[in-house]
Image 1 (spheres, rainbow, N blue to C red):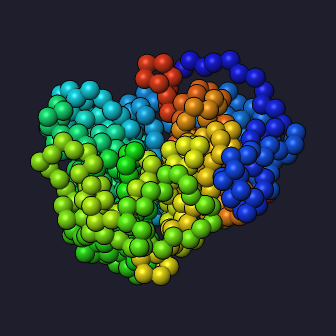
Image 2: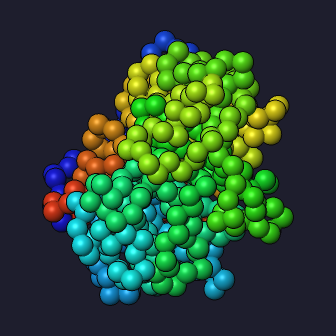
Image 3: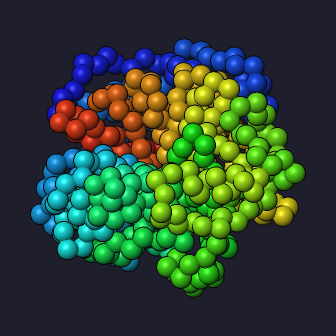
Length: 454
């Protein structure tokens, strides 16, 4: 594994904003950056970052373990695929933890490109999918790992479900004309109970577009979906068999796909000129053809919603449900184009309410966040995928205060897939590699979480 030289991290969290919500709103509007005093961590943070090993810098008192390396042989005999990305953590009946990990492999189509069993592959020319890991919570070591979904393409993010599975999303609109054997751009349900590879079944009613992530509201069974595109929509899927009161959750039964619109403001553009804290009432417009199969236009679904007055976002990526709200990331949104964090309250009037929680004024504060998760204690973890070196996990408190949490000092590639163990004691995440140069890795981080906001 190639590693660049690194120096010990100083006691300064560069660019960390420590103001309250109203002050952060002013930062977003005025573009000013509040820098912390030397040695300060910010309200809700855990203190300065120090080298904790050759891969990560962490706050004092925190530790980590590498639990999954690209190319390492898994329990099923297959090599661990590359491009670790989105991930979730689920409880297993034996008390262990199930991690389900995406692999955003964007291979050149070729026969036998799928990892694992070719018989189970959705498309044997596609190299993406998911791997599942069983983790001992006491030792934070891998008990068993195996391929659980294969033959899909560019599995970027997804989301956990209340029925104990991971919805893995393809960030693509690829088709047989691109050298594949199947249409791509779908969501796939991967149960946490799986012990081997399952046949891949695309959930066509949930839409065919450049998917990124999903978040499921356990109270209604509604699935919220993000789209990674310069002209992106925020969608919701109303299942015909929703998960309610511990029953249902059959997404193969079909349903209705809709796109968010801002009430009485058709074709609202959220990318610039927004005010943090302002509440936007929303409504939802139907998508007549959620599964366009006869076009190479990757914006076909978005354009249907746009024609009905839907709203535009700039590259919607991460999504997560927590504390009754849905949190979504606009990676390129904001006046500085460094990222926005939006909160959707589904219980608001009519179709819900949309609020801009935070907008980054500069890369020093937050550099193009991608994956997101909500901690069991209500804080938010943001995974950077921008130009910063090192890339970091940043924490965002419920009061809108941002702080540095983890720095990837092994390589300048993106960090992804943040998810807490069911008991909240361990934070798992991934660091992508560079094919043929730097190996991708999965990490487990633990420490005194009670000391801060996460």
